[in-house]
Length: 173
Image (cartoon, rainbow, N blue to C red):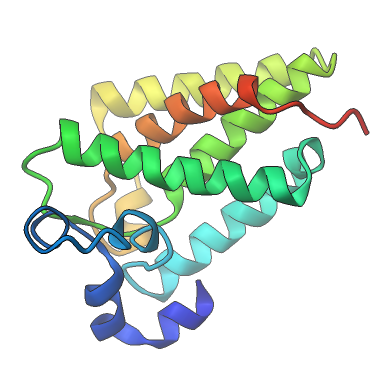
């Protein structure tokens, strides 16, 4: 993500989720790369911090191959959700939807591995996703990210993460 951020707004425009480019020009890579580019350095930093936090909390529950498959599935699932259910959204950037999905998948894996405290994490994530669907982005998040927060990406990430948390066998370590 940091390397893509160094490419500036020109690279972001080439890689972002872009409805027109996807539907009319067949630029399918944008289904994945749109999650790797950001609005700016503050947005990139927030997403990297989120990734580190998620890795500390639930990173141990899946091996690297599983996480790679989970992340790819989240990118695809979120992008398809945006394409199908958000027809007025012309473009999107950021990893936050994927991060929400990773956190949900990891919490489900924790629960499946017998960690009862993971229910607290899962309930908190669900509450946040419901809050965002009702009231919009959390206060201050748009200012911190440097632009609009597409809360539906978080929601789609949570839903896909829920499914993936049950599909992938967690490590018990």
